[in-house]
Image (cartoon, rainbow, N blue to C red):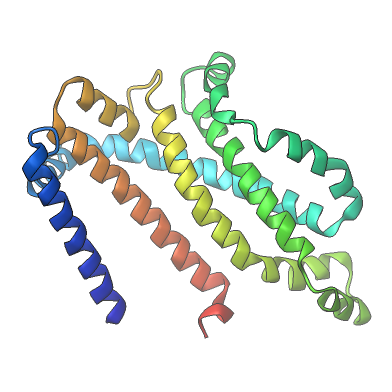
Length: 244
């Protein structure tokens, strides 16, 4: 109940702030009421197509990055030889602004969803791999030794020690990566596409339709809220010991 009150207070505060800004910046910034009414209308008249397109792209990218970056990072964090070989490669590639490769991906892979998904997943792959690597390196050696003393094999060490111990940090990385992925998603949807919230927002801007522009921004916010809530639910199911 206390958390619900905090959420309600935060929502009211944001609404009042938005209303105040719109009062002095109209018509560029419409009122919250106008934006919500426009959003409700658009949800029944085509906006859902753009929301589903964006959801598909970001979910596919997150899954791809998670199921490649996390195992790779855990391997580096627990296997010194692998870390010695790949750490320099990661050090060189991680700082490179990979978003500049979007035109290259579009030329090589066409104008569909694949280049956008691959670009987003490539960017957040490094977030997840580095976080998983550091989490694996910070594991107490005693926890690993206790499994070994009981006759546990390498698979047992990963299943019963490494993965459970690293999951809280990995979920933190997922949340950070999700924010990055949403930003990159918007950028990728402003090039050579006719579907997605990013395309919808930029199209509304070029038509100088500020109500639809802010309705699109609200639609992007809805996607973010849904995905962050989904992450919270999954974490509560997997990391139950954190909430005991």
